[in-house]
Image 1 (cartoon, rainbow, N blue to C red):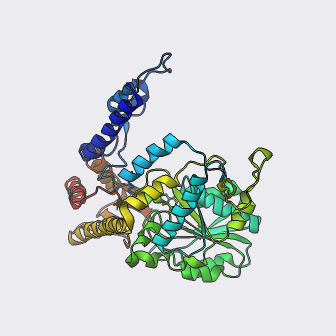
Image 2 (image 1 turned 30 degrees about the vertical axis):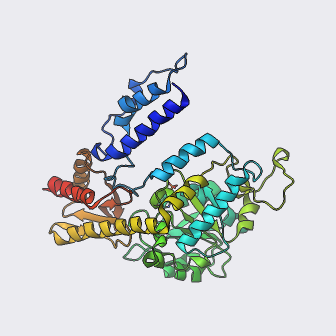
Image 3 (image 1 turned 180 degrees about the vertical axis):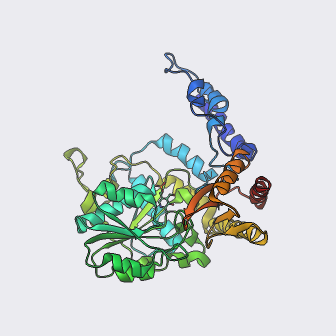
Length: 436
Ligand code: PLP
């Protein structure tokens, strides 16, 4: 077999997978160890054909895959490996460039700058910010908070009690205390509580979340910025999930006030149809980020001084050419295509919430401004937990849970490019059937 034959077979595999994913059980149906046990314990001595890899992908790996690219994956934040994103990943691997220095692939650095500029325009972000790509929001937030620490060494990090665990993890890695601030009844950070917590304390950074992980609450960034203003603390906005919503003008309210932020993270691998992994970190203060991270050994010194070397903006030296997939997604959907998808996901979430509200015994437990609905069935936490387990065991859908206001809560998150109203309806039917 030639590379062309193998590539054609892999492309056929991908096309058939995407067409047929709806028929597969969403949640992997294997027991711990099943996959490992079925494969040889050691590597082959002699070369095998690539077709053997594809065979085992079907035979052994597929049953052990939880299908994140399934239209009825409604857990966590639902995501999409969209077709342009998948193809761009293939091309990225072929080029295999390392975008650490401008010189090590000028097109990779310049496309990263361009793609992030396009994305900033699509989301209505302030002009003139510097953007670069990290693997995940956890890394982006770590980078932002490291820059903050360099400005106020030893200062604390303040965020709401609903902020993502990556904030506290970054604090732990950076040796900074993380202080959680109370939220209001809609799970948004309370600016007065923030002001109290800041008091006379030395504060390195405040993190506001636009679209919290549990309920997609939007912290009041303008009021948070007012509290932070003049304190010397860095304001970081975690818009990992909901930032993408700003591609639609009617959802852009969520990013109000971000012009006062020092940095903002948005993850195209969450709700912008870009395959894992891709997180965009924007900053108003690139000099501060560079000051925290730039360390150039002799072998990486170059003579160009007009260029950006993206290795200076984060922890990794080697950098994947992730910009290609962002650029491909932005081009192949265009503003209108992205808006159509996001609007449809929001519509489907609202529709699902309306079904819950219309049926006795179900309760929507938090506002749902985007594509996630938090809800529960009448009854105890244990009953809700068992309901979720039964629904997920059907393989028809995969939903996840959280805790809100001290109660166990179910979540349905819409976000896959192939999800239809019929898919959401099947989720609702499964919930009602298993609850009954
Ligand atoms: N921030 C928020 C609001 C999230 O919901 C998540 C994950 O769901 C993260 C950050 C971490 O994202 P990542 O997996 O890209 O590190």
